[in-house]
Length: 284
Image 1 (cartoon, one colour):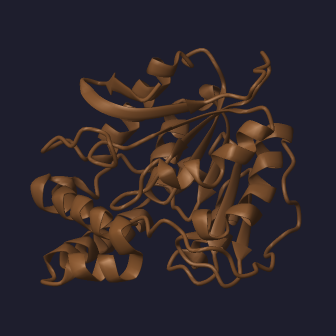
Image 2 (cartoon, rainbow, N blue to C red):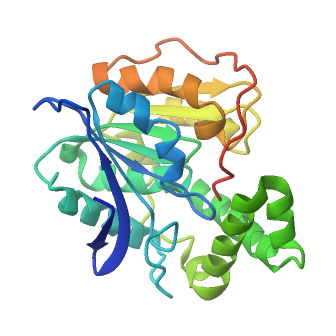
């Protein structure tokens, strides 16, 4: 499964299965971030170890990203949430309780979907992300403003190329088209938001992972205090690219969380050694 159609748009969807699928194999759906991110972030990080642990893992390029279609309009939060529902239908997972993984903006989408369909979601893994709250509204406004400034800079493509080589230039071109040729920056931020009381009654268990050097690092403790069933882990020396730059350490927590229901109780931080270069910054 690769090219398919979701809600009338072309969608790049990948489904990885263990060599010998079992009826009780966990179903995991991964949602990536905005900007230069794509399903490749999962393909090179969490997907392989999850499949090795007998999980079925689906991941897709968001509308306007990667190899999915880039419509001119339709980039509100609700559009991305509806796309997630559409992907579940294409996979045939409507009657199957699933685990959701969201990186950056993908986590915001996942939180909103789980709030609307708690009976369908067994757990959330939230990587460097924030639920769609009023705090998130301010954060995403700043991120969108930064994306506009980046792509309008005269040497933006050259900077991407210097930072990340040939792949970086392609990522920069894709991000520029997304910002300049669509209504993304006008459509975000948009609700519906989750209120503090809704978050305090959030019905799905959450594992939150944050980089200590990230702009979102200070959201870990409030998230753990507010959500009724949430544990967060902060990774020293890591920033927003935590998913791919600390892929081994992230997998060591996420795989048992999803496949065994085992949470890193009492863990607030773990040391991270130097790791290989990652794909690129999700924005946000």
